[in-house]
Length: 306
Ligand SMILES: [Zn+2]
Image (cartoon, rainbow, N blue to C red; front, side):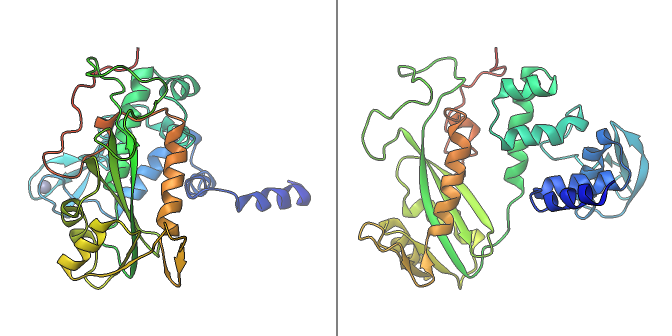
């Protein structure tokens, strides 16, 4: 390669996403294109690999199956691979997964992604929901330091449901009632200043102290400073748990008070909204509800794409 071409190429490295960098590294290691996703799966799983049946780390290699290294547990004798017990287990065409992840990041529709990759639309639908289920398992254990928390609301959606109890909306539509009502599904997002983020689908309607008591204590340090807007539920939650709390009065125009602001969590909300907006609504039952007994909707059909 000419020196000038090389300079142009390396100048573009800075624009690569983390996933694209990993992909490049595998290609440089001499991996054929189709094998890159499989190598990534194996390498990512290495650190946390253990027997899914008995959690033992005492296992040995036991041949290959479905493109992946198979292992056999010495204690219980069960076999497993890097994907056993994850939402991606038993899915085929692994060599297309990285491209599919890209479609997902671009908010491509189920059909568009299927066309681009030459897979069936039902496969595309299944992959979408399994990939999203996997993302849900990749969460930080605990938030530290200054933790911003804020809630956002998505319009409840029965996309894919066979029997609607109300007139259908078009392209996501609008709520019939003003303000927050049972037509909206609440998503609570908590984010610390290192960027670790945890979200919870608390259910339909307003966020309450009960929701916060259920969701937050198990994922935050006791000595955090909780920064939120003026919603009364946060203050009540902080009083009950003895957690330091600072409210930023957004209505009075105070967006930032020293280190106390909710700009990071709000930026996260707007990125999430932007990503979701292209889908024209998300089926509410596809949102993983956090609280026990919050059955958001179970009427979605098994094969929704026709
Ligand atoms: Zn075992």
